Structure formats: structure tokens, C-alpha cells
Image 1 (cartoon, rainbow, N blue to C red):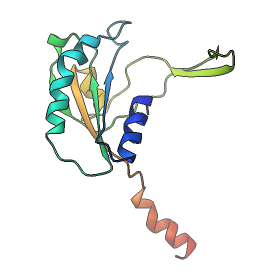
Image 2 (image 1 turned 135 degrees about the vertical axis):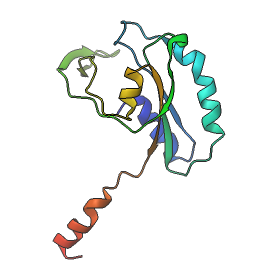
Image 3 (image 1 turned 120 degrees about the vertical axis):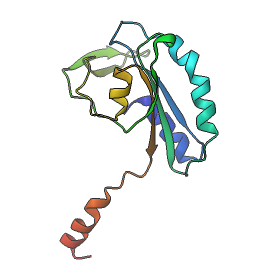
Image 4 (image 1 turned 90 degrees about the horizontal axis):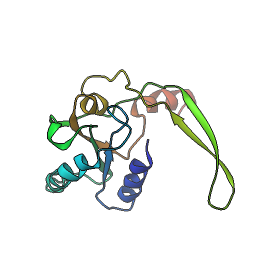
Length: 150
């Protein structure tokens, strides 16, 4: 997940209702269309803050790579998964001259599943995905307990 989601996770961990906002780009042009998030972001945030949501939950909002007036609407979605594309590794130097490596996947459309955030933004919709901090794989609790006899 992105650094934007990581920041929202951290806010959620300390009890702050958190909303991650991201602007998709690279599908229609090389420059982010910040005007889309600027035009629609405040209204989305206002509506989300009018809701109660449980502790340990956050919201992930993605704006499509479209001009503000070309956005098709808003969808409530599930988290999608990008197809792993070509990985590039770029050797760089930070401000102090120390080496680090930037890992990035090629920018391309994934084969998005229906009802996901990816499908929504590919089709020009603002995507709102509620996320939970509880990443416990509940289906695995029983088999692991049985294997260990607990």
C-alpha cells in the first residue's frame, strides 16, 4: 500500500479518524490532475465526516485521472489489487549523499475486478473504500490452533 495509506493507518492507530486521499494519474496523461481532487475532495470529506465509523477503521478515497467535470460520479468499493507489472529499480542518492533504491512498477491499467477501487477509477469514478486495521486472517485461526493442539 501507499505512503498515503500508511499515514492514515498511523492516524487511525492513535485514535484519529483518518481519510487517505489519492489522485490517480498516468493513464490519460503524465501530469496529475490535482484540480479533480481539489474540486471534489471537500464534498467527499464532508460527507464521510458526517458518518460514524468504528475505531480501527479508515477511509481510502481515490480520484480518477480525469478533469473535474468529466468525473462520472462516486462509487463505494472494495480494495483492488494491481497486476504485478515490470519492476524497475533505480539507484539514487538522498540529500546527504547516501545511496538508496527506488522500486516502482510500470504505470499501466490492471485487470481490475468488478466492484473494486481500481475498476472505479479506471471508469472515471471517485472511489471510496472503507478499510480496517484488523488484518487478522480469521479463516486461519482454527487450522493453526489445530496444528499446534491449542
